[in-house]
Image (cartoon, rainbow, N blue to C red; front, side):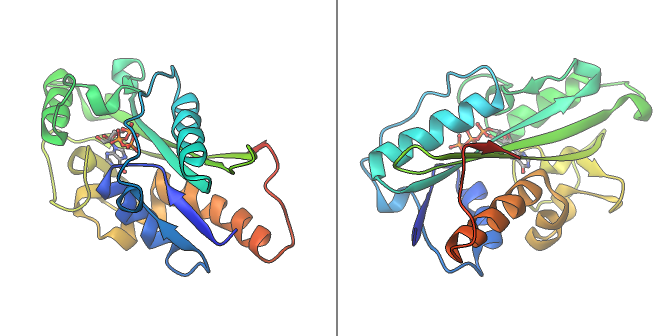
Length: 208
Ligand code: ITT
């Protein structure tokens, strides 16, 4: 295993993934290296199903190890929505801003204690031979009443992390990666992959 392909077309995710893997002895490939890769329908009912659908499709198509990420924002007051539908919350083709504006509208007048939310990120790594690894990372926080900050992407300007006293939108990529759902999941994946690269471990069909 010398190469891994990032099974996503989301450039913001790719930036964060590259940040975590920058010191690994691995060549990181992206959709730019496979311009003919087809669109994948995320037809699963859970983050895990969607993450596997994406990684399996990319591993099959490229014949390389593939790493995908499916992420959802779960808002307590909304019974866990938008969750697996986070990218299409305001409809198919919605922009990041459309989505967070819809969220703020639904949360209008809701007191701070009831604005708890968590980001859940499921990362799937699949080999061309079908070995699988699933890891998960979660970050807890609150939905703000107004957007703050222009860093990051998606719901970052409206997701406040109490331990940092800022929204993700106010954090640098390094700061976000340290405590974010994606950073946590990718660091576990990285540890397992590093052991494999050193010949000390294997990616079994496991979930961490
Ligand atoms: P791929 O499927 O190609 O990876 P996507 O954007 O469709 O890209 P998801 O299905 O995981 O990715 O959608 C999750 C949505 O949740 C995404 O479009 C963003 O709006 C949001 N999101 C994901 N990660 C986020 C993060 O770290 N911070 C803020 N919002 C995030």
